[in-house]
Image (cartoon, rainbow, N blue to C red; front, side, top):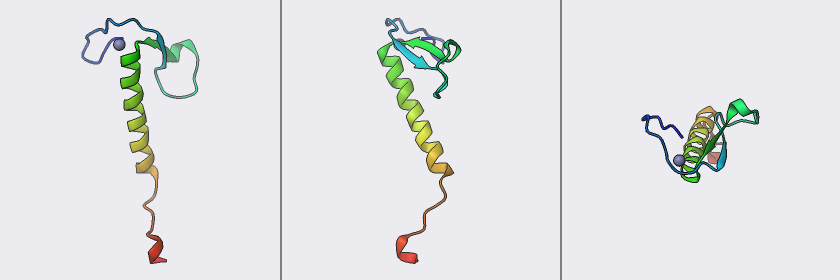
Length: 66
Ligand SMILES: [Zn+2]
């Protein structure tokens, strides 16, 4: 995998990764990654998704304030 720093990972790529995390399974949205790179990318994506989700949710009122 070509990292953002420009360095190339030399581990054998045996994981199929979605470049953009969605349901697009076409070859243009898929890339081969090694296990380590895939893990890092998946973790980053789930973190970003969680942050996005929490930002979109309106602040919950405290149940005691009803
Ligand atoms: Zn890698």
